[in-house]
Length: 313
Image 1 (cartoon, rainbow, N blue to C red):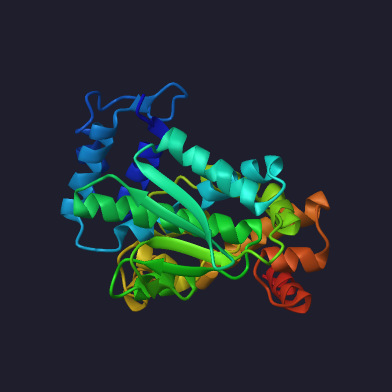
Image 2: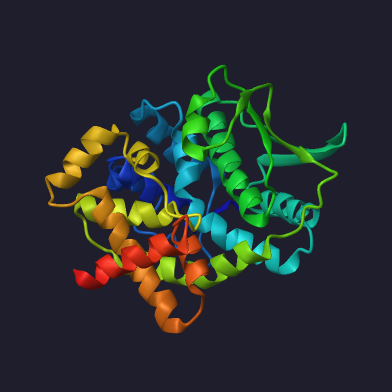
């Protein structure tokens, strides 16, 4: 049956943030005008592979798969939430995730085992072409990490088959070791249950994130940054360095480009926080301490101070 068209549409949207020609990429489709978001749209994997390989030839970044995995955060939240509604434990959620991969990405495999009191998850693929293989494994590995954290697995040991894993450390803010496989490990003795507070946060915020994303149609660089900010939310908003890396820019050049448009990363982030805060306050959906947590403030007082500044603007 192939890959759902919406997965290719996400890849093309990501390509636009890397300043690649989406028209050129769509030109590799048998029908460049096909509606990739249609429910019944499926793309043969060789076609998906051809488009991805073209992207990888145009891109010099070796960690492009990691960047794409970060971009998929908003989609990961939706999957996390849907799985959490059915799963009663992390173990059951992992089984459902493996079934999801088998159904939609049959060339990827997730194997779970128990060794020395730890649950180990190993991601692999039968794709042989090295760049394509790395892209698929890195992006899915990042996607899975976000899911495990959102569901409630606190302490995770991670390894990737690269001599230098610093890019993963910078992006995920998590220690990642060099090893033989894309692997996760966590203690079997710990009572791993679905984090219901996190799921409630996703339940409340996900529709609003999607709404803000739908409303932001601008083609300017600040508009692109705002969309990327929303895409990367966990739902906690990402940092400047995490977002600038998505555009293949240094922090300095990223800020300079925003200033040339009369904006800054702080102003864009604060605008998003203000919109989300208004949504949560008006709906009476959360207490002040929960809103502060949702928006990434360390203390409710910090959120109240920010809200006072917004009101005085």
